[in-house]
Amino acid sequence: MVMGLRGEYDLAILATVDTDLLPVAEGLLVLKETTGAPDVAVIGWSGTSKHLEVAGVPVLWVGRRDYDVARDHTDYNMRPGDRR
Figure 1: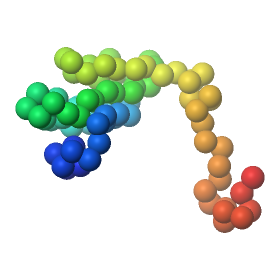
Figure 2: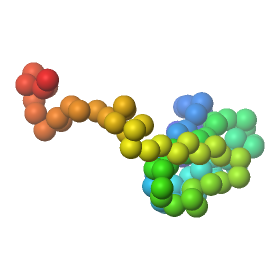
Figure 3: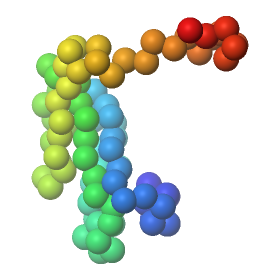
Figure 4: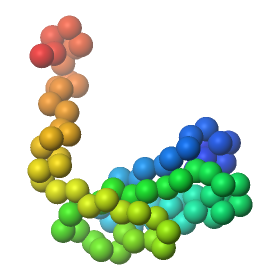
């Protein structure tokens, strides 16, 4: 939210499975109405709460297939030189 106030990005993408980030989305919408930026969108896990909708904020519902395609298989517990 602070970075949005400073104009440090053009698009905020909030990823969540519940409503904890909706106040941020609402605040960013107010900021966009007053300053013209940033845009805001939500990514939610398909089959979870449908209460992620905020008027004026697009929601992209992702499922297991989307997760499998984008999954990062890196083991961050290993030293960088030992990773595959």
